[in-house]
Amino acid sequence: MSAERWQDLSLTVLLRYLELIGVGAVKISRISKMTILATHFFSANQPIKYGDRTIGQLEALENILGSGVVDGLLTGKLTVRVVGNEVVIEPAPVLIFDKHGRRIPPAGLLAKVCDANYGSAPTKLGEVSCAARQERLKLAFGESVGLIATDDFERRIAELVGKINADATIKNVLNGSWYPICIPGGLGITPENYGEKLDNVIVPAAKSAYERAFSERTFRNNLSGQLAGEVRIFKGSRHEKLLEAASKEPVVGIYFPTALQGYSINADREQMASLPEMFWLTGGLDALVAQIMYPNELLRDSKTLYYEMPASPTMSA
Image 1 (cartoon, helix red, strand yellow):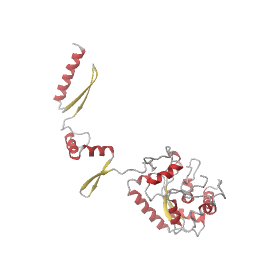
Image 2 (tube, rainbow, N blue to C red):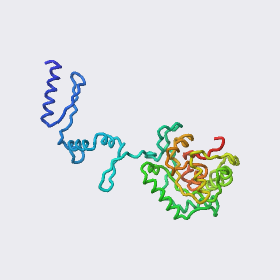
Image 3 (tube, helix red, strand yellow):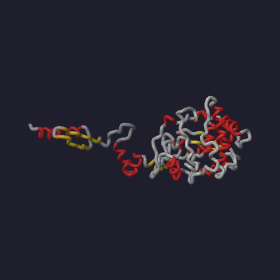
Image 4 (cartoon, rainbow, N blue to C red):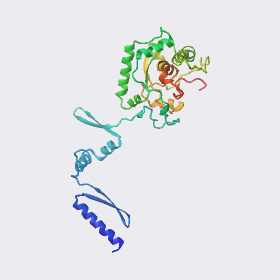
C-alpha cells in the first residue's frame, strides 16, 4: 500500500473514531504527507474545564451578547459591574497609572521617557504618625509655623485617599510610594518671590531637618544665594494653585515621588495636560516640605532617587 493511500485510510479511520466518541466537529490540517494534525471541538453537551456550564451554553450566551461584546470582555476593553438588579457592560476605564503606581505614558507623548528603576524607590510608608511629622515641620520652620490640628490633617488625608480609591483610572497611584504632607500656611510665598523664599526660608528649613536626621552627614547647597529672582513657575504645572492656596492657609496633600520615575523634565511637564485637575506638578516648596517631614524615607542613602522639581525651574533650566 502506498504512503498516500495509507494516509487517506488513516484519515477515514480517524474521522470515524471521532464520530463514535461524540466529537461534534473536526478540523484537519496536513502538515506533511505522513503527518496529520487534528484539532477537534467537543460536543455541545461537553462540560467546560471549570464550573458546571457546557460549551453549548457558552455558545448560547455569546449569541445573546454578541461577539463584539464577548471580544471586548475577553480583551479587557469592556467591563462588567452589577448595579442593583442590573448588569452593566461598559467601556473599561483607561488607566492613568500602572500596577506600580507609575504614570502610564499617554498616547502622543513627544518628550523622552525611559523605564523606571524600582530598585531605587524610596521606602514605602507603614503606619504614619501625623503628629510626629508635623512636629518635624515645627522644628524646621519654628513653633509659629502655620499648621493644622493633627486630627484635621488625618481626616483630610483619609478623604483624599478615599477620593483616589473611588476612581478606577487613578487609584493605582497608591500602589507606589506616597507621603501625606502639610504645606505650612503664612510663609508669604508668591511666584515673584519664590526664589528668594527658597533661598532664605525653605532650603534652610530643609537643611536643619536633614542635619537633625543625619548628624554624621553634611548638607550641601550648591545654589546658596543664587535663587532670588531666578525661579519661575512652569505654565501648565498647576503649581501656582499650591502657592495661592498656601498663602491663605495650610495645604494638605499627598506627595508621589515615584509617579513619574523615568520621565524626562519635559515629559513631566507635557503629561500634565492629560492628568486630572487634582494632580499638581511638584516644585521646590512641596518637594522640600516632604523631605523635611520624611527624611529617613526620602533621603535614606546613596540609592535614593534624584528628586526633580519640574514645576519650578530656575531661569537657566
